[in-house]
Structure formats: structure tokens, C-alpha cells
Length: 249
Length: 312
Ligand SMILES: Cc1cc2nc3c(=O)[nH]c(=O)nc-3n(C[C@H](O)[C@H](O)[C@H](O)COP(=O)(O)OP(=O)(O)OC[C@H]3O[C@@H](n4cnc5c(N)ncnc54)[C@H](O)[C@@H]3O)c2cc1C
Ligand SMILES: Nc1ncnc2c1ncn2[C@@H]1O[C@H](COP(=O)(O)O)[C@@H](O)[C@H]1O
Image (tube, rainbow over the protein chains, first blue to last red):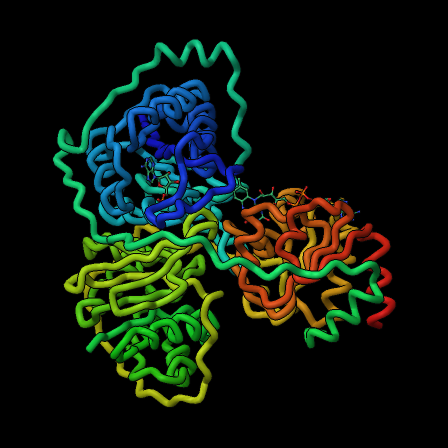
């Protein structure tokens, strides 16, 4: 029966206020709280619901990342994924390389559906799902807020700038998730124990025949410009006169 | 010489303002000649695109399959066009974010998302971590540059041009595996959030869709567009296309009034480029006050009616 592949990235927790290193070499990630990219949690939740509805028989969580990424994959298994694959890679890779890795796994597993987040909230690239769909030569539906599967066709509602748009896709296909697709379930303690016994395979880029050529060089990372401190007004009267003074009203 | 192709976003024969802004970005590439590509079924948007100031020509590709902007269908045609260019840009709207990575992968090149500054033909700045850090990136000179343009960072070019329209025939077979099946929008008849000079935004504090009317009333009085926080959208007070922020719209109005919005980093990302930010919140500790140019601590249910009275 059919499989769903879910891409799960380990990222800095969305509540962390990130700081740029003084030497401009990057951002401070030492000792910072990490978690599953929020969009990927939604992707996993959707896959689990599709499995519960009988659309799929197996949900596989896949990640590319450092050895510690096993933590996030164990969480994914505790949420309900059947097995996990970690492509172990200490240094960050570019989205095109990530897409090539996921393509290899897709070719091996032949899933009905691949669900990714619409963007990873560390680099905010928002590219991997679309690139994977292109390389796989399959349809893509980005920013999904509703997914319906009927036989070999998916109807996906997507959040676009103009409102909501619906696409019909021949499966297999790639879907990227938006925030309102679902609310991910909480993990229960017994599930965490059970997850320890679920299979988690570890691969390397080399074993998949992929090289990590970089196309982009980061010359420096800088903090955003600081804003001038604003003024506090005491009432509506003062608010309106201040805005008039500034010439915006 | 650099040759930049900007992929136009258009609807009903009208080129979206995000295209004007992407052209402005493209014109900052040193020694660049900028073309605009219109992929369309009826070709109507080409005439509008021809007016964009500073461009060399409009490349018009007409195919019946382009009646709707379906990324998987457009991408192979853009790949063909890309052969003649050193740079291919698209706006960082849901349209551009959808299609450009697909083009990049088909070309086997990486893509830059949300470029906010051009420092050279192969040198760009883009935000990461919801805009809390900026990366300065260089690409090697032999590599085609594919990038989406953070539209809030650029002023639109004027419509004073008169570029020639050059029809181009592209014969590649386009996939039929992805089909358009409909579009709906709740928020018509009001200024467009992404291009409005003034925006009034409401948050969770509004408490109901009914109360959210207070936001609409103030917006109407100011000729402003309406925005919302994610919490307000999730709760059903406002339509999804009104969400402002990291995962909603990134906007740069002259005036942004945030009402009952706490100022989470994901929301602030969307308003960093607003010229004047006004915050109305009953909690003096709310993070929104850290970025506000003008702050008022107070209950929105008394402040908004009072504002309407004084402005009316
Ligand atoms: C991956 C990810 C992406 C996200 N993307 C976005 C995004 O694009 N846009 C976005 O907005 N959020 C986004 N969020 C959510 C964000 O983190 C916040 O949860 C959200 O912005 C909070 O909305 P809010 O300010 O309306 O609600 P709250 O944080 O609940 O704030 C309500 C505020 O109203 C004030 N208030 C209450 N009553 C009154 C009153 N009577 N008068 C005046 N003030 C009052 C309170 O003091 C409070 O500050 C994202 C989150 C994640 C995890
Ligand atoms: N290293 C990775 N490991 C797992 N999933 C990833 C990785 N990189 C990207 N993805 C997936 O692709 C989505 C978009 O990522 P990005 O293109 O980097 O913004 C993420 O939400 C993930 O679902």
C-alpha cells in the first residue's frame, strides 16, 4: 500500500530571539532550544491523518541534519510516524542539495505523497518542496490549507496572496504546508516509550551518491538595522496630533 | 553586460505591483538590461507590462495552458526563456515563491529567496530567521542568478515606459498533471493590503468577527487596507489573505496601526519596512511597543471609537 514521506527539519525553536555573532560569521545557535520546524509538524500531522483515513499505510519521517536530529525524528515517531530516516550531515546544505537527497529517497520508497513544510524558519528559503517536485517530475501544491485525496487525485486548497486557490493534482505529488492546514497533536508519554523501538535508519550523503557543492557563499551575517525609539502618547487626542505632525494623517 | 529577466505576475490583464517592484530591484543590477516576461493565454497583460519604466522589452509567451498561473505548467517555459539571461527574478509573492524554485531545480541551479538589496551582479542581501539576521551572499560569476525579490524593500517603477512587445514561441510540452480548480477571495472592494499606503491591523484582542468591524470602520475612515495577526485569522475574525507577517504578507505602508496585537517576532517581520508604526495595546509591556514609532497604552474598545469620533 501507499506511503507518505514527510520531511522534518531540526531548527531553532520559533520562540527564540536569535542573535547575530559579533564577528558576523553567523547566528548564535549554541545552547539554543531546538525543535521540529513548525510547518513540518503540520506536515507530519497531515500525513498521520491521511493514514488514519485509510489513504496511506505507512508514514516515513525523513531528515537531513546532524546526529542530534535523531531527537526530532524520535519525536516524529512518537507523534505516530512508522519509521524514520536520518541522512546524517553536520554542515547545513542548500535547498537544491536537500531536494536531491529527498529525490533519492523518493525513488527508493516510491511514496504516493511527499509533504514538506512551506519553509524552514531558520533560513526562510521556502524552496525545497518545489525543487523536489521539479526533480521528481511530479505536481506541486504549495501553502496547503486543505488536502483531500480521492484515488489517484489530490485536491489541495492553497493560501495565496489573493485568497484561496484550489489545485487538482495527479498523484504522486509534493505538497507544502501552511499554518492553517491542521493543529498538530501532542505527544503522549507512552508514545515516547514506544517510539524508542521504532526503526530509525541512518544514511550518509555519500551512500546516496550526493556531493555537497555549495553555490552560495556567505560573506557575512549582520543584525538588522536598529529602529529609533518611538514615543508614547497618553490619549487619542495626542495620538492624532502626533500623527498629523509626522505628516501621516 | 548582465541580462535580467523579470517574471511578471498579472491577473485579468493587469500587471501586479509586485512586478513593478521586482523590476526596480532588477534595475539595480550593475550594467543590466532588463526584460519582463509575460506568460499568458490572452497576452493582455503585455501591454500593461510595456509601460514599466526602464525595461528593454516585454517577452510575451502565449499558450492556452497559461490561463491560470500554475507553477508546474509555467516552469518549463520559463526554463526555455532563462537560456538568454544571466539573472531571472520573480516577486517574492505566493506566485513567485511557488514557481521560481521549480525553475531553479529544472536548471540545476540554486535560488536566492527574498533579496532585499543588490550589492553587485553577484552580491545580494537577504533576511533569515524572520528578519532577525541579514545574510550577505555572493554567487560565482559563471552561475545564473535566480532570485525572488522581497517586494517590501523596493519602490515600484513608474508606468512611463513604452517598451516593445516581442512574442516568443515556446514549443515544449507542458505537463498536464496539475490543474487549476478555482479561486476565492473574501476581501474585495478595499485597498489592497500589499500596496496600500495605510494599513489598520487587528489582533486576537478583538475577540470576535463582529468586533473586528471596528478595524474595518477605522480603515474605511482612513482609506486604509485591513490586516490581521495570525491569531485573529486562526480565530476566524479575518480572512487568511489579510495575515501580516513571516508567513503572511510582508508590507511597507507609510502608516501601520496595530490594534490589540502583541508583536510576536513572526508578526513584526511583516511590518519592519512600514514608515510609521502605531501600536494600541492595553499591556504596556507588549513587545509591539519596542518597534512602535507611536504607542498608546489603552483599551481598544474605548480607543477605537474615540479615534473614529475625532477623525470623523
Ligand atoms: C511558524 C510560525 C509562523 C507564524 N507566522 C505569523 C505571521 O505571519 N503573522 C502573525 O501575526 N503571527 C504569526 N505567528 C504567530 C505569532 O507567533 C503570534 O502567536 C501571533 O502573532 C499573536 O497574535 P496576536 O498578537 O493577535 O495575539 P496575542 O499574542 O494573544 O496578543 C493579543 C494582544 O492584545 C492585547 N489586548 C488584549 N485585550 C486588549 C484590549 N481590550 N485592548 C487593547 N489591547 C488588548 C494584549 O495585551 C496582547 O498584547 C506565527 C507563528 C509560528 C510558530
Ligand atoms: N535538512 C532538512 N531536513 C528535513 N527537511 C528539510 C530539510 N531542509 C528542508 N526540508 C523540508 O523542506 C521544507 C522547506 O525548507 P526550505 O526550502 O529550507 O525553507 C521544510 O519545511 C522541510 O519540510
